[in-house]
Amino acid sequence: MQQSLNPWITSPASDSADEEAPEAHLPPSAVISAPLKGMVVPDTADRLARRTVSGSAALWITGAHGGAGESRIADLLPGARVTDHCWPVLQDESTPRVLLVCRADMRGLTAARSALTQWASGAAPTLDLLGLAVLADAPGKTPKPLRDFAAIVGGGAPRLWTLPWVEAWRHGGSTTPPLPREYHRFITDVAVLATGTAPATTN
Image 1 (spheres, one colour):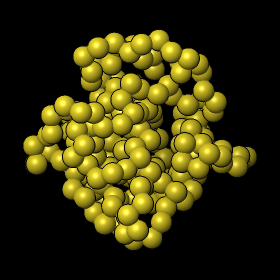
Image 2: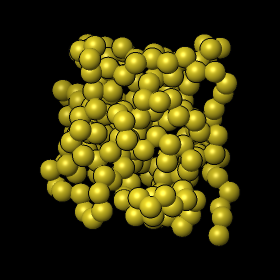
Image 3: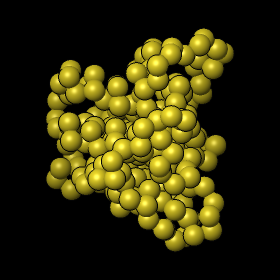
Image 4: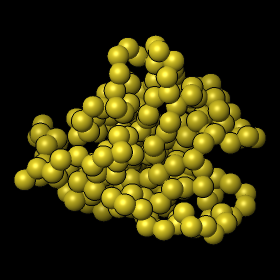
């Protein structure tokens, strides 16, 4: 996705060397990579709850709403665990790495926007947010209004991945490959961001 003026801020991003193509086909970093001063805190009803989680994980998967695809995405990523639609708080007070996920329908994108607003305003617990993964909610091409809205919502995340529909999952199919190439790239991207190393390839 080509990123230009970020609608989450009032001034355009300045040109910098950071716009060079990163390794592993990582999506370009957004202007917003950490909470911002002055961001309006969303209403309490629109915020994700906090949840203290035990144990450890290379990555915590947080669904912005029910049915977001938390478990599917966690199954794809070694060492990932779900947070049951809550921001994770670790018992040892360390900073968790988090991936936010949602569906590409209006409900899902609106929930993701609220969660990202909560994070950007500093109302979420301390965490390292890697980005937002938007999963298709139906077969076929996503309607343009929803694609455009996803791009706006994704502008509030450090990175954005848009992932296509997987028909086999509707019938209880495995999360293991073969999957659309977008998922292979996504898995590699997230592994590099979460651990600094790409996952082993499987044939």
